Image (cartoon, rainbow, N blue to C red; front, top):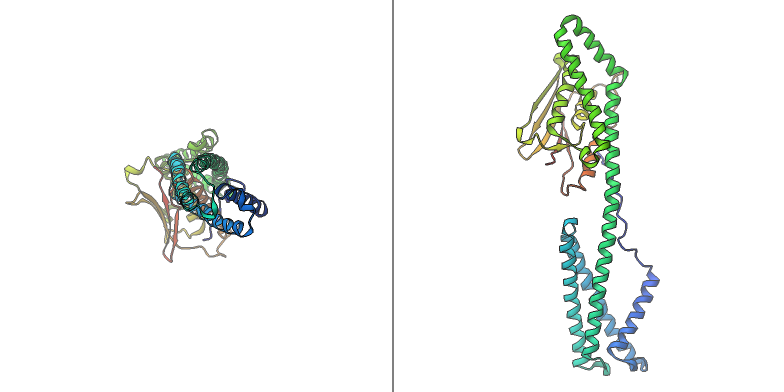
Length: 369
């Protein structure tokens, strides 16, 4: 299935200069570098001026290229927020080293070889290096400041969108639970049980109460607890899905089977709330459920610490009845969106894996420790 793009491109950390302004600034700096390295007489001789300008342009362009490659390498390998101090220290040290190499090259050309009749002195070159080093520290600080602001802004955007997706998921779940069709079938099942087996009817009411209690608690925690409210433990989610499954099995009888086998070591892991309910509801909504053709749903933990939700495929015929609605993948998109937004807080968190063949529909959910 196609997945929506969720993250907007981050804004440039430092606003880029327009091309004409950058060219003018580079030309001015090149002329100033001519003055420092060769001296004022470089502007009195056209041949001398052109030769010095060409050589200095090569030196400066090479220095800029080398510094940009070093900066890109460090940013790529140490780009995480928690590595900010390491990144800053490496950037300043590496750029200082690169600048030192080009200062030594300039010293050899203009002090040792006295090319173009240079009047450059060691004292002047040291001052140039110190000023350059100060500029490196200043611009590295500015870069990191803009980077931090961009990260913070994206963090706020993603937090808001994650909360919105949670609310959307809860809304979809609530709509399914309080829809007239669902309530009619649930109350009809309860009515039949009251006359046939009052004890089972009482258990049915208890399970129904647990379902609605969990929905209300989940909604309350997502609003009041911020990021922590956006996840629930697998143990709580499984307890809820058992109650929800009880309602479904009471309604469909032998046509509905739900098997849960999760290792105890994974029960404290976290997942977005109502994720399992959306997947179970999706299976019930789009598959034939009969005693002769039971819908079987498995919820299993895997050896690599993930959760597999699988059901046998027996899709409804589009003309089979009023209950059938063509899938819009709203539930699946909601789940994928939540995990993509959560990946900001958990770098490297994989997305849910969705697989479908002629026999089974399977969704594998990463568990968050």
